[in-house]
Image (tube, rainbow over all chains, first blue to last red):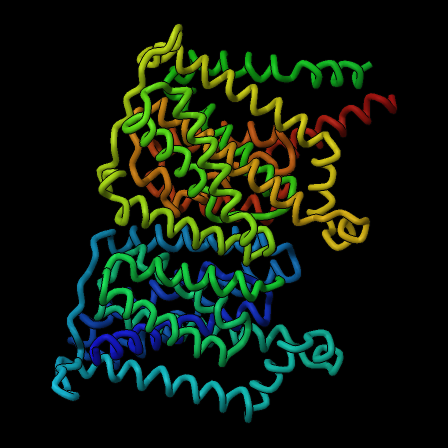
Length: 277
Length: 318
């Protein structure tokens, strides 16, 4: 029982960290960004590469992994996404999917297609009410909650955050105040991408690292974003944990159905609350 | 003069398409041309939604797979008659469309794409794991069909002729559909749905009809591919293969029947022959997609017809 809840919260936390970027990109730029999965995968692979560089020092390696995706995110934003502003959403989907294809193939070229397993970087376990819980998972849950509060403060109290929130509401109005909204949006895009890489880094020790790991998670994150409401930060937070719990509970009864159940829930939510895009 | 000529060509275009595929067969081998024909049917079905109605589905493999599994299961459990299998596949495709349509067609844009993707994922899971007892799971299942009358399905030439007839039939249906008032209304929905509603049309009904037609024809293509391959695996319903049909409709030019055919053939040529020469084939596909999105929105057929028109105008001026 407790380990099911803990598992659900872990998955929810990771889904939340990855989904923020998707949700923000959608809210600010009206673009469905398949390339997000690429950033996530690259984060995990850079972690693997830098782990051997730092003699297995996990924190240093993960910082490198998160920072390493900044130039990649900038390139994607500058040369693909910025050219698709205000265009039909179909072209954005296809173009970012193309970026994902190119990137995944490049990863296969560099690192090969064989899955790479990673060991738990903490290794200790806590005993809560008679259940052994890996400390690493508890750290993930705590970290995702930290990210949530940091983002809340960021959007509430910093001027950059305020501009972005205002831009989400009405882009033209902010622009008419003489603020270059697009520049702030690309900053948000880079932050979202860094968080996606962080998600990849955190999730890597729980699963294996392989070139197609992004596809799977991306679908789940789309479900999170659609259920939570596009561009809504708190909605994303809640729906990530809710869907994480759905996965954990379903997985307890019938393992392979866990991910499919998320889509069933999403379909049900969309029936009652269709989103006009 | 030239315009008259083009009009005559357009009237007998089904003959031309038939001849083109007959000519392709000796070049590419009959088996491969079969693949091409079936894929073209799928692209046509897809384009009714994407090209004409402007709804990008990212999960159309589901409807293809439903047809494929329906016909294979019919052959296994009900009757080995290939026509019965096709009929069951059509019913299954239409049924899936009617079941999922009311949910999907209410959404637009990204939501439509993703909700189809989600349903496709569910279907893939059902075929791969949940219903593995019947579908054979990852190994798939074989489907054996009886020979009915002159339809000796062991004979590749017979299968070829049959698929070609089916393709021509689908082209004919699509031509009638898209030039009818129904087709015009679909294009109106693509351009501006609010305006169509304002004119008093119940757009939901038309969208649903188009969706169901598209799923039915996709299932038809799936059933034909089972007759061609005589086995079915989860790759027939795999979500990652959706990009194939999207790429094909982009490459050909989406809002046109000829464009769909050109796109289908070009995609199949690329995917059949390119991996032999280029190892990093996904990367090539990605770059080609980017180029199409940024440079050649109207696709190959759009480019050709624009060029022809330009020259025709020049000729008229002289």
